[in-house]
Image 1 (tube, rainbow, N blue to C red):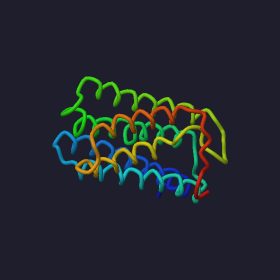
Image 2 (image 1 turned 180 degrees about the vertical axis):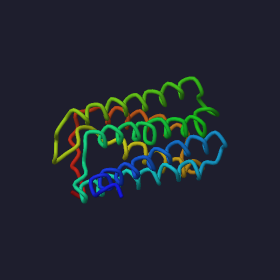
Image 3 (image 1 turned 90 degrees about the horizontal axis):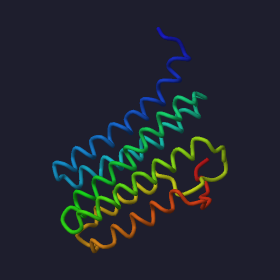
Image 4 (image 1 turned 90 degrees about the vertical axis):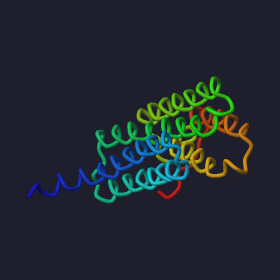
Length: 175
């Protein structure tokens, strides 16, 4: 009906939009104080983010539009959503003022990291820790809230934020 070109370009974008939607749901579940569902939605975002790139490469459907859409989705799913989760489940109770600043800093560093990623053309490594790892790690860490002292969260979040905007070369795996 639409032809092969339409199908091959839209499929990776559907995975990217699923990534975005799961990030959105993560925030909604956080506001409802459903920790496991909220963190789980970020894990689904990680899966969708992994699949969108693989599908685009397999179908030879990579595009500038897809790259921009992926970054916009990633800043929500792996920057904003983990920032909100950690704020709601940790900082709100123990450290509301400074916790908001740390969560905001994490989200901003994630956005800066993605903007830099979009203008660089490194094929063998990432410059800075990928936001997908940083956000996914924070969501995973949250699942151990009852075993980890709350002070570990701002320290970890701050370190990951700085590593996202650092010039550290992180090898690309699975390519």
